[in-house]
Structures are given as structure tokens and as C-alpha cells.
Amino acid sequence: MKKAKAYIESAVRYLFDLRRNKNFLSKLEPQHIPTFAFHFAKWKRPLLALWFPNRQFRYYPLNMAAFEQRKLLKFIQQLPKAEIMVWGRNYVSLFDKVTNKIWYLEDGFIRSVELGVMHSPPMSLTIDSQTPYFDSTQASDLETLLNEYPFDQDPELIEQAHSLINKMLKFGISKYNHVPNNKRSPYGIKTRNRVLIIGQVENDASIKYGCQFPVKNNDLIRLAARENPDAEIFYKPHPDVELDHRKKLSNPEEMQHVCQILKDDFSISQTLETIDHVYTITSLAGFEAVLRNIKVTTLGCPFYSGWGLTDDRQTITRRTRCLTKEQLFAGAMMLYPKYFNYQTNKEIRIDEAMDLMIMLKRQHHASE
Image (cartoon, rainbow, N blue to C red; front, side, top):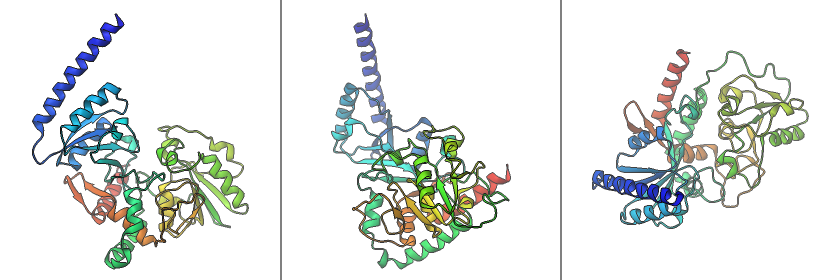
């Protein structure tokens, strides 16, 4: 009985898939790139169509059965111009068998006003042909760009980067921009050096693929406290963890005897004010601290480490040059990501994205 049921279900899926293939081909225009997309949540799919109007998409989960992968491989091989897109550092064994181009997508570094878990559309995307930017186990397009781009021959780019850094800091633009500046300081009167520890989602892919060994937030707190016995030490939990959107693997309450936990949700720009030293695993907040000339210690290997701007506890020999913060910004924020305006449905420059974010922040905070 079970075998008969499985046979019927398999036959139904086979016929359904044939129909989907036929429908896909019927909508495929000559100018379209057939694109097979993996691990994209349903709410993201309409956004992809806006970002890539020259592509015809088919969406698939990661957990495909072996026979389903064989059928899909055969179908892809019928379309020599087909390409693959995958969200994050995710893997399907099918990828080893295709010779087609594979693109890895992730949110960019100026993302949105609201958090990503609220399904807010990203204003920027990173699109990498090698691996996502946070994967330090191999070179990404961003790492290659930072290693090889002739920044010294492009003074106009560096001058623009300097101007945009100032603008970013002046208006407190960050990856997420949902928190307005609080009228009071997170810290009070400063009497000695201040160390800020940036908490992260401990099972996040940026830690899994950005660290040679597992690291938890409490490990980071212990290290910072041990190395800075005379400093004021503060810990900022990750907002997704604080709001119970993501899992907590270590309890910061256990470390209250060595640090002050920031309970209120201050913006990262305000949290970095008056700070002398930041400790992080791989957080983007470390990059924002670098732009503010704050000393940054990294336990993992984020994209901004290894260029002579940070105190790195994990070495990466592939990164072979020293960069200025303007060069790092130019590569990571200007040359690498793409920016998009959903009000006009058009790709825009980073300066236009910043102006749009400033306006959206004002609107969002005024309505609260």
C-alpha cells in the first residue's frame, strides 16, 4: 500500500513538474536569462523580479530529493544560457554537476529602516560569483576586488568615498535604521576608557563561515574583560536576539559581573559614541567603528579585517595589502553592492540610496 501511494505521489509530482517546465519555457523571451533560484523566501520573490527584469525565474527549495535534482539537472542542461542564484551560503549537491554560472545573493550594507525579519525589502544587495562576502573559507568577489582594485589610480573614487563616509556618519546611516537617536546617552559621564562588545546571532552563517572555530558572545565578553581590566565594558545584544526573532545560545546575564548590558535599543551610531575600543566576532558594526577611527578587535574574519585597519585574532593570508578606510569603503560600499529605489523601481547610486534612507528614516521616526 505504501509503495503504491509513493508511486502515485511521484507520478503526480513528475507530471506537475513537466507542466511547470512547459509553462516556464512558454514565458521565456529571447532577452531573458533562465534563472533557477534556491532558498528564496516567498516574500522576496517579487523583489527579485524588480531587481532583475532581464531574468525569468524558477524557485526551488534546498531539500530536493535526488531524483528531483536529476530531473532539474537535465532541464537546466537543455538551456545553455541558464544561471543559478542562491540566497546566502547554501548548497545543493546539484551545484557540483552544473557548469552554469552560480550567483550568491545577500543583503547589502545599507539595507532598510526596519529589520529584515519584518520582511522589509532590502535597499541594497550583494551579488557574488564566488561565495557570499561573509564566507572567509574562500575568496569572494569582494575580497578579490579589495585585493586587486587600483585605488591609487582612482583619486575621484576615493574623494567621493571620503565625502560619503562623512555623510553616513553625520546622519547615522547603518544597515538597519529602525531606532531613532535617544535623547539620553547610553553610557552617562565618561571617566575612563570604554569598550563596547557587539553581540551577534550566534548560529548565524556569518559566524559559521567567518570563524575558524566556534565563538559565542560570552566568549567575546570574557576576552574583552580580561584584556581591559580598567575599562568600562558595555555589551550590546543583537536586536533580533533581544526581540526573540533569533535563537540565543549564550546568556549575557551570566556576564553582568564584568559588563553593563545595554537594555534599551539604541542605534548603532549612538552606541559607538564615546567608545574607544570595539570587540566583535564578525559584526558589520565593526566596519562602522573602523569608519569612525575606533580600534576594532575581531575574533572571526569579517570582510573588513585583514587589511591593516583592525586588530585581527584570526589571520587570513589571502588578503595581501593594506587599505585606508576610504579604500575599504569604496570597495565594499560603492563598487560591490547594487542599490535600488522601490518608489521608482530603478537601480540607483549609493549617494542616492543614502539620500533616500535619510528621508525614509525621518518619515519612520516621525510616525512613531
